Image (cartoon, rainbow, N blue to C red; front, top):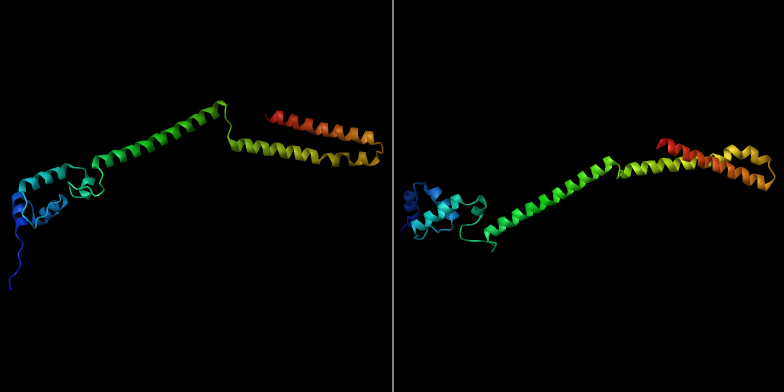
Length: 173
């Protein structure tokens, strides 16, 4: 039985390039050269040199082949454009936030939570003032039989409560 031997092209190329057989096999595989068959050493050297100076992404597929069917420079350009788009968007948002901060400082804009808090306090003040009217007038209204006087007393007390609310809000402002 005859033992099958490799043709020796890898050993010859490794000797030619001055590298180990393992390194030669890896580099030739990367550049897409089948070292089990005879190949041109000059072409292999040219491809290895190009691969060494190419971007690391190019090593993902053998040089000279494109598994995606797209141009490698096109992919890089698309990635660069995507990064630039993200950066432009981030800068737009930063500018908007800076503008809002400026408008808030000069008094053109007020924070929504501050407005909500003020409205809540004003509504509570109105509610408390209006709900205190019956407690203040109960004794007087219980003795009064004239409808016109009852109406005038209620109207006067409501007016006082609203005036009190307005003066409290003016003092707070």
